[in-house]
Image 1 (tube, rainbow, N blue to C red):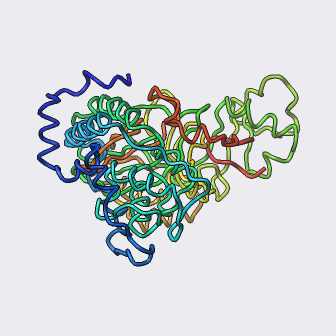
Image 2: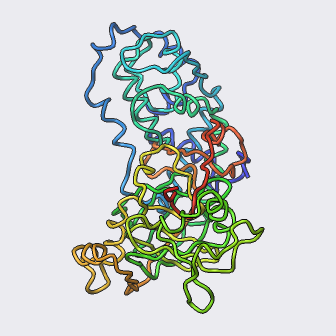
Image 3: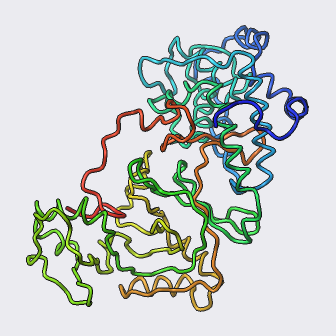
Length: 441
């Protein structure tokens, strides 16, 4: 799957010539043939970091985003250009490793910075005019922010652990990643619909697309590696305001049973009630929580602020019984590693997405949505027209010319272990979590 040859459907020679003609100056700096590197290295040294300030450099990360949908068919050409560019980088020896002794930021002076500059020049994040020096100046900070934006990292301009790991993924591995994802994008290049939603699992974000333009982007929390969010195509048919949450059997067995052994008040504190097959409520104290198997009962949480889905659930048909929803734990969206659910997808600013989904359903203005949510009364709303939804696994794409985005291969599907950067960091697993949000314990 990660083979670097035979995947691109057009002539390599044509691609190389096209890439060269479109961006000859950029490629000369990015591909960095040895003569070009010599020229860069011998450029006049600058003085202190603060006499190189360029306001445009500090804003360069904002240019990474695009209103073009990730799955737009035109992006296939951008990907093919990127593959040609990375082939040239690999052919010219790739880029150097960067091994700082500690995190570096603007104002630092360190012997590793010339290698960092060279690395960023080759990938096109740093212009040649920045020259070579040991100073971590505004040029380097702007280039680091651009690199971080392209790799889904916090744009703090600091050379920290995750940024270093992403920098040190070799060019040939990135080339393989591009080829792997070109195949995935080609499989999604048909007519996706006038309005549709894309969940990119490794990027942990959501695009709402209308008339071939991204109208909303929402940060997401997706499934962790042992409870993965599935790749699927479906249609959103319903939004539930103030939903009940019904615990899946697997969650009852794996999570709720052990929690009830430790704390018999857990269900009551979390407004979770038990019902038998006839709809009769069952008292928790009548259940043997030490039994090997969970009781054959429905575990249902009432609507409210502590509900696992909080204000909203977004339903679509699928065999995996997953859905999208709100969460009472909004702080999760601020985390770098947003792979913490049991397969469903938590949506930041979900009410914006719901307003967009229901805008063609009569009677459901933003004001009415907010009014119903405030009532705390369960209210399912059928969409007037179902909206396609696509759960995808895309770890590399290019929605703008010469701007390539990479993401962590969190589920290790790209064929190279070093691409699962966050998995390799040694992150502690979440303990005692329920589907879908972590309820108070």
